[in-house]
Length: 581
Ligand code: ARG
Image 1 (tube, protein in one colour):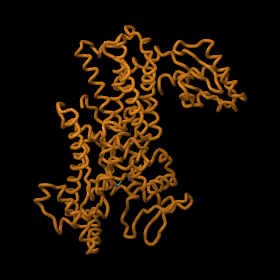
Image 2: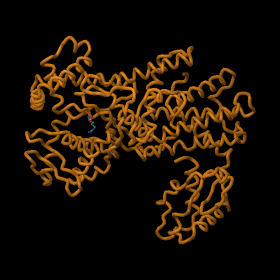
Image 3: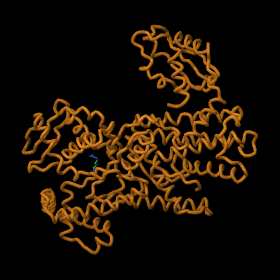
Image 4: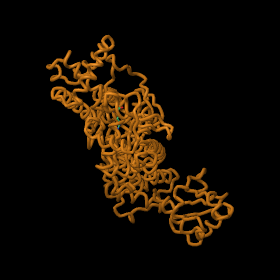
């Protein structure tokens, strides 16, 4: 929780009348009740008492008046004013003290500022990206990849031990297609020279030919069946394709700063399904249905979960059941997040319900983190016909386009290519995170790459601008890093402009924003917050001179605080923070 919110909540708890039966102030999340007043003239934070009226059997106005009076009897110095109004208690902070506590906290915590530490000693497993290797690594995977990465960083920042899992789709009939394609049309030299291109060619060819010759699909099924039986030749081919695909993914992930702790995908569970199936059997949860084995879930109003096909082979859900059990046994996680598109909601509902019904209460810690689809405005999105947009091509395009923009705006910038890569990829990431995860996004280059508007480049640009201001102060003889080392050398009364108070409040609320992201399993609040922080900062900087002003040291200290928070925020979203652009 933000510094002031926590302090005010504590104070309220202390000063509320003795707990009447049924009211335990520890249980009322007082901090959550605090709101921003509609008009800053009322104060900086407001405490509504309406929800307490019943427990105290008193009118809100009376509760508020008594509480304000009680606090005012010995008002702490960090509060300038406490007033009751219309059932609210309004709190006005002592601005210099507020500035001092926020800015010195940022100074001392630095890259840790904003962390709640609440995840200490707890594990969270995050299953994200998880492509199907039998398909080209296409652009529609971007959203899970970006969301999963941001969530991973966020949870790690809050102190959790994060296990990043790439649950590869590397098992199932589709994996027989490559084997068939390779045997019919494979070109060994091409595979060695440019594996991705060759795999794509085989993929396209397979689907073209299968339209005319549906028996190819049977052959693929047969090939997969052999694979499942452990046929050495099929296995060797599959291993090779899998390896080549993972190499390709890793290259893309590296460009996005992503590393997985585990690539245990569906194949990993191919020999681990037995115990789950047996368990469901023992619990009497399985029935035959048209030759297949299913787990009916009628009492939960869900369609039955498919467990075995009529030929006895396992399915995607079977492997997810085994994976869920494995994750529990392996990690004892406090939380497991599956970042997978919303079309798989039913699948996860079924998986979780089957496990719950089988008595595994730990499955309450498992959550499907669904997200909406992306519509790419200026990209062709046809699949099997070869007009595939590779994820990597999108990253290249983003980098190229931002390089053009940078060349135009800042021709003298050193390391243009590197910055262009950081800005281009940052633009894409931000574009995906600025919407609530369930919302559909329509993606176009113009909007994503703009340096103005609500974009990643705008936030990165503001960060670079701050870095440049602080660098410049350095060249003018100010040792910026030293400022605030001894806060008593600073006069926080000088940070008295309303724009300064607003900026300090923005900085103060950063930890709360992260808690909000954690609670909603969605980085969107952070993306929006960073835009707001940039706006407030740019507005302030437009109106107030820093260098050469008589509040120079204090203002530079404030700017350094904004820089740190932007840096932390960009990092948490999975974006780079170039110092010049
Ligand atoms: N490979 C799947 C797909 O592309 C996503 C896997 C998600 N994770 C899971 N445990 N089911 O649709």
